[in-house]
Image 1 (cartoon, rainbow, N blue to C red):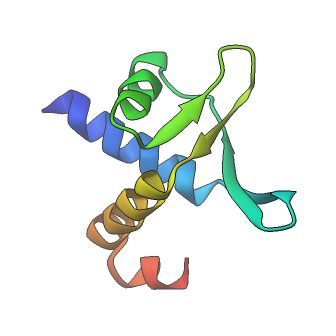
Image 2 (tube, rainbow, N blue to C red; image 1 turned 45 degrees about the horizontal axis):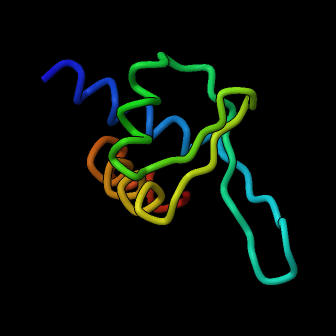
Length: 84
């Protein structure tokens, strides 16, 4: 249970601190710095919520990760999440 909470809050923080990066004229990604527990990042990658490269200092949130993070924001932040 504790691991799931850590993963949820890690994903939420990744989302809240992410930025959009246009890598192609028609493709924009959400990237965030990966200064979190490696176990949580690995679990989120395994769940399909983010992509990471061992050499990079940032991760890329997937569409599923963004959707899950938005649901977590609504759960944990309530009305404050609507401004995100």
